[in-house]
Length: 217
Image (cartoon, rainbow, N blue to C red; front, side, top):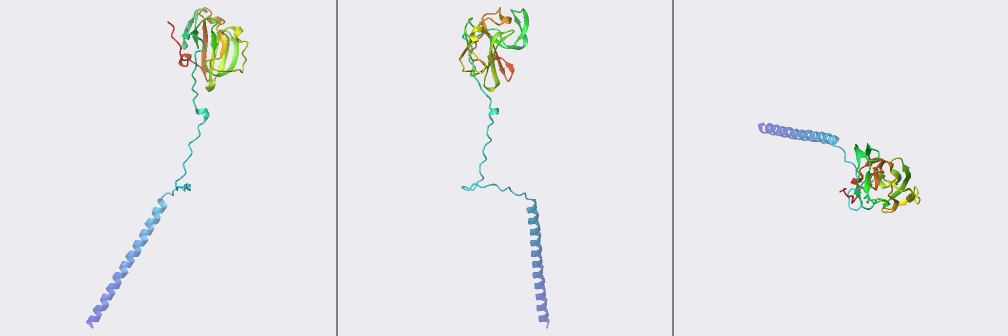
């Protein structure tokens, strides 16, 4: 009888142990499920990328197209007259003394010394946008070039301008006039071409753009 009681007790203990193990496994599974669900909620979704049908890789993005207006225009200006010796220099800050007027004035261009009646050439390809007589610098031709550049040729002879018209296209080296003495404000100076250069309407020092200009002396 005693032996039967011990057997029953042993079976009861075994059931309890099995029950406890199963309960622990269930609790563990529930905890793992809760943790996995929480991690999934906190993980950002990856974007769906289009797939290249051949190799399974995302398609390459095309580089942005270059805006032509962002491209800097580089021009190479040639000397507009033979000789190419620098006379009166450019100065936008300090007035330059005028031998003709006997006074100090800003000189927003340069004087290129040469022979009187020397031919004057376009310094770069462009379109003639002005032919007139300036009150100070005499007969003048303006040429507009790419990149908002403009060159101005003054102190010309009037009779050399009759073959030109506003709107004419000219190439670098085309003859556009002859050096004269029509610049009233510079008539006491040596024969020269008064030459100015603008970029976007702002005067620039032509010596920074011209190739082959020589220092006087």
